[in-house]
Image: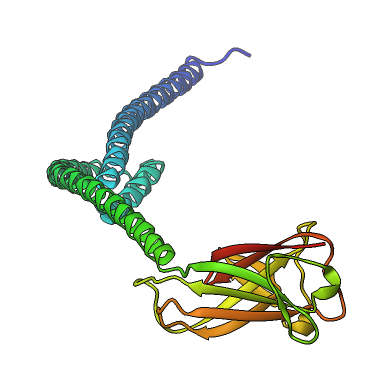
Length: 313
């Protein structure tokens, strides 16, 4: 059956309506897409601008950090305090770390911080200039002190040398006076005594006739010698140069020139500076003196004051 014209018109109308709806929907979708694209472009521009601001801010903070490090080093070298700068440096590093959170980034707040940091750097330039001036004054004072110290060292060395020289002169004079004050044994004789006390003189004796030795001498006049108790030490050396000694008969040890020496016999006297005569008797005991030339040395107060000799046949 063929459709009536009325039905055909109705279907055509529905088709047009559907096409119109589809066109309207496409237009709406196109409009929404365009709006979304515009919004995305705006967001991209905003993000790019913020990123650029963050990077510029970071570069300024990095530059301030480098300058701050240099000023800390310079102030330390000049002897200034850097405690406050160390704290500012820590805050600066915190500000740099917080830049990573772009959503919380506030350009105005960071611009204010940067101005504050830059003002601080200018202030520290003034502190550095002041410290340099003060250090220049201190350097001049230090150079003056160094020069004065050098002069004092030179004067002290000169004084030390003078004191050392005078000390040496005094020591030499003291030694000369000490040597000059030493006693002097004169007219030394060595006589032999037999067991009955009979003396034999001449200086040459038979061994069997020597029971004891009598050593006699005079002490020469010496105004520098102190009149007081003194000890005379006798050393008898046999022909071989060995010291004759026996602790049982009064031998012992004394000091001459800081060196210990053994003596044969000793005798205490009261020196009165009257050219007094001194006699000392030494008995060797049962041992006889060996044949040959014997040396007799006399000592007093660390000095050798005389020599004598006798011969045994």
